Image 1: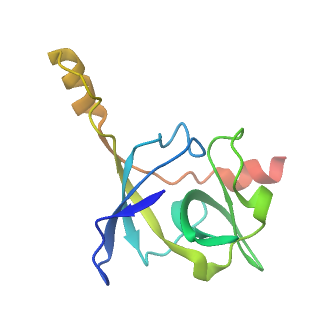
Image 2 (image 1 turned 90 degrees about the vertical axis):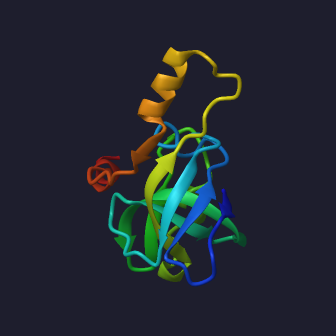
Length: 139
């Protein structure tokens, strides 16, 4: 994930998704509206610093708060790079909560129907999934 368009001290910023770990909720190339400093609750999609490489920002779903931090998972169970690999993420590495996603228009899309379909689905709120902690306990 790359951070774009955030002024120092501004509460909101834009980040771009890279990789498949949050599919189907987020796709490679999606832009995210991030609310930096916002409280994160179980089920929220959050932006955080990678615990093993802190100059790298990642986006994951906060599943459960534990003694040593947040357990975070990607929505794609086949992609690696979440708490199953690096354990719980300390609270101070969570940067903010994702509020919305914007899907850029596909290149070469010229038909009116195609543009209408894109316009209908391009901007969506990123909703919390409160059932994730129940699914985690069921495993």
